[in-house]
Image 1 (cartoon, helix red, strand yellow):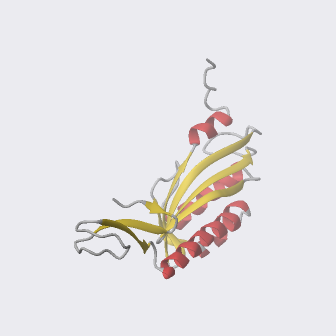
Image 2 (cartoon, one colour):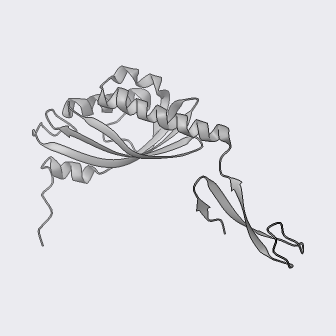
Length: 185
């Protein structure tokens, strides 16, 4: 049994000696001890990785500095769940980001929450924009959208090596009027 709380993992330890350090007596007594979850260097790396992801989102997606993507992303990045029509690597990612900015020129991508562990960063996000250009073959509708999602990035040497994005595309399609609204009860 390994309950987890805060930045420490709590482990139950079975004691075979008669005197346990926490003062209890008796054979087979159990006591709880804590061990650090992450080495301080790993904790700093996790924080740094989260910062890199946030900088990528602000600089490349929200500000539209697509050519700066190579500063944050490896050339051979692997998109585990690519968007329709997305090609491989950094160039494929840049193409899809350009398509998003064409479809939603006022896009604002906002990270709501992040969880880091070792070389991975999970980010819960929301993006908003107005559909003023073609996107995924859908002509501009002029409609505002709000889309949520989660992305899991794995970083190597300060850049994203692979990524997996899960986005509420059904809601996006509904907001664009491509899908009929759900029936009212």
